[in-house]
Image (cartoon, rainbow, N blue to C red; front, side):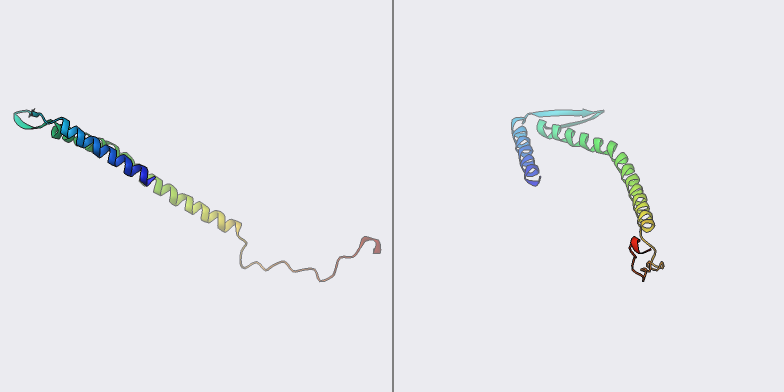
Length: 110
């Protein structure tokens, strides 16, 4: 799995470099009254990073909530497994069954 991740990372990095080299035009970004002039590739990469941050901030609370719920369920599973193990295990205080000292007699001798 790790080599696939490494190859994918290298491919994405190469695409990012080619993208930055292909988009060298200067653009002006205006937000309300503030104007900012920069390279098109930088502006687009910044927009991508901001989009990723906003997406993660939307998903993160749900992931945290699910993680907390999963921890509670794992504790409940552990408790139930411990109860099942203690119910299935024989009690230590019970003495073992005593063996019958007399051997069994055949039916024809009775």
